[in-house]
Image 1 (cartoon, rainbow, N blue to C red):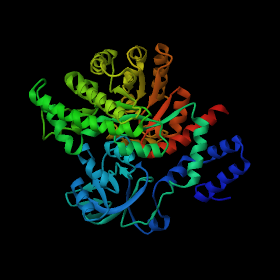
Image 2 (cartoon, one colour):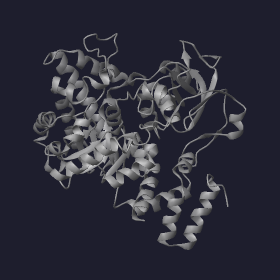
Image 3 (spheres, helix red, strand yellow):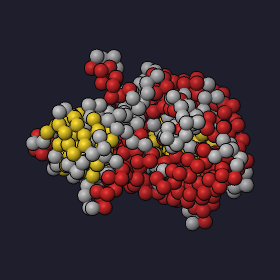
Image 4 (cartoon, helix red, strand yellow):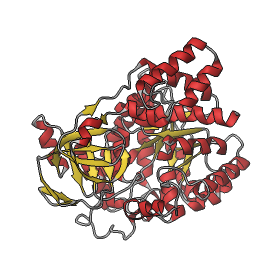
Length: 517
């Protein structure tokens, strides 16, 4: 028999199942294929012969799968300059922020000193299918060079990285190209869909029409999380900065909001149109202020712990016009897509709610803004369950929410008291080595703690509303072990980055098979 981690083995397995031609043979084939094999076939990988010839600089957290080579660039501007010259670039920096996203999209791969699986670099890279290694703590960076493990490399030097293993190499590796268009993979995933389709849906996290189209090509059945804050980046960053820094109710605020609304309406119409008639769950702005405002911009808005500060629904309650503006943009986008002859479907999600009264207040604003919209276009209004208090009081919150969506990245952070940007590179590895943790909780859902919160919230939410739709839109939605737990917990859908959709389709089918055994 062929090696069970090879394409030849997969081809033989599927051919035998086709020859037998029974549903049981299909189930056996789907059960036999590991998620790691499928993932390796869907992404470029480092040739074994090539990697053995290069100097291993270090190993960080494998944050986004795939492999890449390119010249060292220490800023997004340097990446853009390199690509303008026709060169492939690897972005290496301490950490990334939304202001870096133009350069990040152009990079072949991303390496950061800080961060973990839920850091900005990791989440954005997975969404775009870009290899990433984060938390490379031994790496030191200056303006034009880097030093790690006694090796000093200058800007423009070739390096390589493997986001599947976390390895970073000096020099240029030979890449084994992906096999994502193979008929065998499509057959495997079609069988997986047949097995799980009536029990759990697979949606995607996508913020652009391009990402939505890519997710559809991978088999997504809707968007479970559209992050509106990602639409305020790049050349639009000054617009959101201008709004935040303006005085509430001032002419400057009104001007900033008008420009932002038109830009957001255009972006959202593109996403909704690309996904129609599948549903798009649009999360109103939820970004810690330090991602928009550095200390050099505003001392007034500086916070000691921005991840727990003025973000999500809290910022909206301070600045009411923000979520009203975003709702008007959604209304306009729905109308625009309908005029294209499509069947648009969008829901509105309020983030970081801890108390039902927060949701009640914001919901009243949203309902006022959508009151004149045609009935068939009316969005459902729901909330993310991402704070422990929201999980505990889910029975009350369900009275005001049309749906729940668990933001498991933040929920994990808050249940453990772990900073998702700092803890992985410093602590998680030691905890795993010492047996304190059996798995990184930002990769695989912690069932005893975070999972208990989810089970409690599902039960209490459905006590209030038996038909309450419940999804998961954290990156755990693409993890096979987490999906198996979430299926048993009664989740209706999981949502993950576009490039993890095939993994989720396979894992969900395997979970359904296991639950029926």
